[in-house]
Length: 333
Image (tube, rainbow, N blue to C red; front, side, top):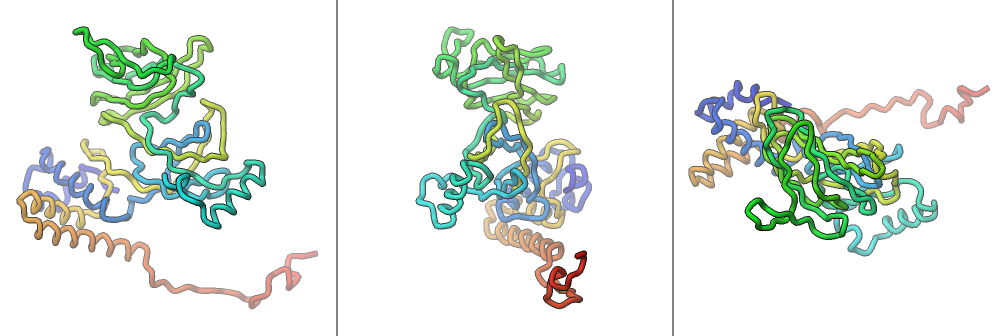
């Protein structure tokens, strides 16, 4: 991939016609990247990702837009979408589930999309916790984080504003070294966060057991964190004891803001043409915008053809014909 600084010094500068350090240039580049990522799977937009599995659920990072496959326990699972539990299983799915139960619920058979979550380690509902939020940069003192969820009495958290009115959620004003909720939570439903200078880390804390568990970690630019989750029903570890799984994922569009940020479409020629498309669209020239976008997509397809050619020469070398080494008694005493 390329960085924003590299894009600002590329031929895209000529296309944009504005100062490369301006917000207008960055917006054009980000708009072009976002539109291209919706048009297909391009070089660099399909990646391998690792994540922790807590209990039997994986919460992927903010950069994951779609999970194409999950590798657990030394083997690949069968990915299922949200419809999996709502449709009658076919012969293959029924056979896999039968084998799973025949093995007394051992082994890894399938993984299921379970919607989104604002945290990567959801609170165990039977063990309510206080939430502690830590900052990493002193400049973030005074910024706020609002937590929405269910309290230890199984009620939606509602707090009082300074003017005496009530609001859903609890607003935390960040301080050094941390700030803690006034209520214990059984579940976190949503997080709203101010943009910050540094990363924010959140932890679960139970005063009775005096154990601190990780809850979430947020990048500076995140304001409404929302992460894809995947459940592996036949994989279970204790709450708070993570294991590592690997997934093949399609990246989610994340706008570049700083010179070292990555631009997720690395083909600068296609990006430049996509920026032209955005400019045509802003001028209400929809035909010109579509023609330019088709050119950009065509260039990305050319890149895929060059990197992953379909027309390859396949060589098969069998000095002993079709006979196996065992049949030829090779390597045997």
